Amino acid sequence: MIKHLKVPESEAQNAKDFLDSIGALNTDFLPFKKNGSILWPLNFDVEGELVEMEGVPVTKRSRDYRRKLPKEIQDVAPRAFDIFGEIAIIRLPKEIHEFSDLIASALIHSNPNITKVAMAM
Image 1 (tube, rainbow, N blue to C red):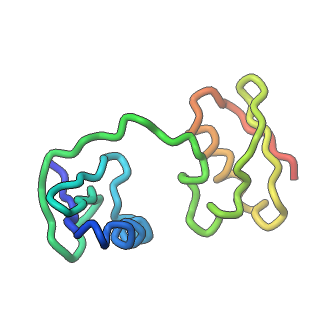
Image 2: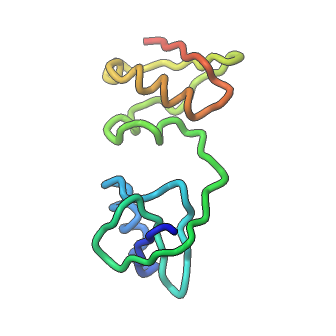
């Protein structure tokens, strides 16, 4: 059983953004739409109307590696990269060189075909 935060549909996007910003949104499960409300799956309890119910696991995974990065670098991390066999090749802007290990790890964990990452800096 998974706890869900129940919010009116009109507040759904704001609630999602807030839950995501504090790490409370459980992205391993799908939200539900029920009787004019959205039920967001949670990682931990938050204030509001909580409903405990069976969660429906997400079966489709995003291959956007940036979702696995800290919020402060998600928007500046490059969207595009090349794949040559099992190697991802990515060009990093100077301002995020210090995050190269995190970016490489996120790329490898987001795409099962990638085993190595080459970075052009």
